Image (cartoon, rainbow, N blue to C red):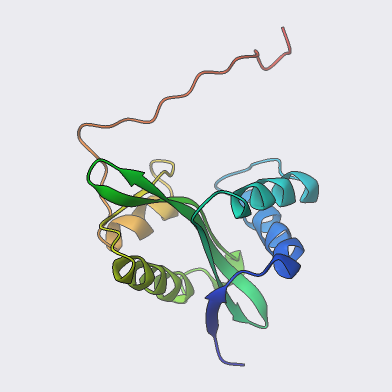
Length: 152
C-alpha cells in the first residue's frame, strides 16, 4: 500500500492515541500513557487555535506530527508538540517524509521557525539534528513539579 500524508480527522483520534501509547510507553521514553490520557492530550490539541496535525498512512496511521501556529513579535512560529512514529517503521524514512511535508506546509503558510522539545541523547535528538534542528544556546526548557512524586 502506498503512503499518504494528510490532515488528521477527528474520527481517527483513537488510532493516533493507540500509536502514541505504543510509541511513548516504550524505550527510550518509558512514559505511562493510557489510551484515555493519550486521547485527551490529542483532543486538547485539536481545539487549540491554528492546530495542524498531519498523519502518515500506509496500512493505518504509522506516524503523526501535531502542533500549533502561534503569533509572535517576529511572525508566526510552529510549536511541534508531538512527533510520533510507530517503532517498527522508525529508520525507514517515514518520519523524514512526514517532517518534510509538514515543513513545506508551514513555509507556504509563512511560518519561519519551528520549536520542539525532546530528550538529550535519544534517537529523536539525532533525528531532529539530522534534519537541521539545533539546541538553542540561549533558551532552556524548565519545569517544576508542584506535587512530590510520593504525593506529599
